Length: 311
Image 1 (cartoon, rainbow, N blue to C red):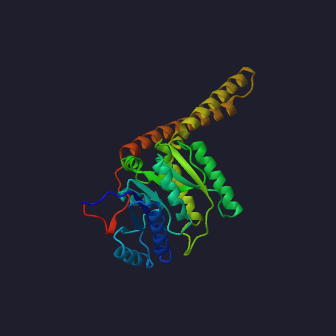
Image 2: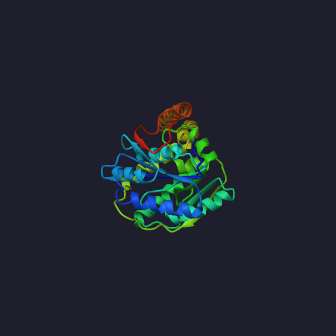
Image 3: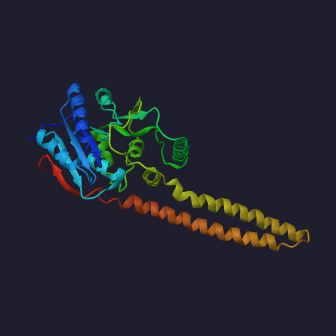
């Protein structure tokens, strides 16, 4: 019979041949210090280097190291979340493979969890980025705060610990494009944070260029905001009010003996836009309802898994 596992650590990988061994060793050392039974799950998102081969070697050396290999690259949202859902520990820790999420915080995460915390997130105090990227990041977080259905935590990347109850609850949502760190906030469970300074990347090349970060932000906003779908309804209301104002302007012009046609033309144009915005808003509400009712897309399709116990 399989013994219960205290803590699972999930580490997504994409071309991390230089980091997969050191990060696994560092995480195992921290878990040993904490005195917990554990598993370490490496989930590879179709690496083209030697990451998978080196991960297999780690699995052969330690049965507590497990490996999932995806049959293609499923992106930064789906693959890590799938790995989290495959974990069997009473608590699950998610972190990156490149040491920008410091393993030294694992002990503090576990201590907070043992004290009763359901979610503990590491929050970066600062980011090493250009002024333009910093401005875009500030604007992006502001947009999330204004239009998102719930607040996001600036500096939180998802690096942290999640209680088994939280993981099982989020897995039942069957979100096809899971913005996991946003889902943690949306779940309503009490959440604690630990600030930390972001260490430099240990090796390899970052996968987060401007295009990938923009795509991640758009996907995250789409997954966490229903207010945007209702924006056309608000525009319809404003345009309808403008229609009434210009219609009144046409009546005033006619009363004063002036040509009302410019006002009537503008009124007709605004009236048409008001109806267009209204129907777009209704369609947006229907899309939202369809999205709520049809969350059945698998996050990834696995090509291989190693060291997982038989179902």
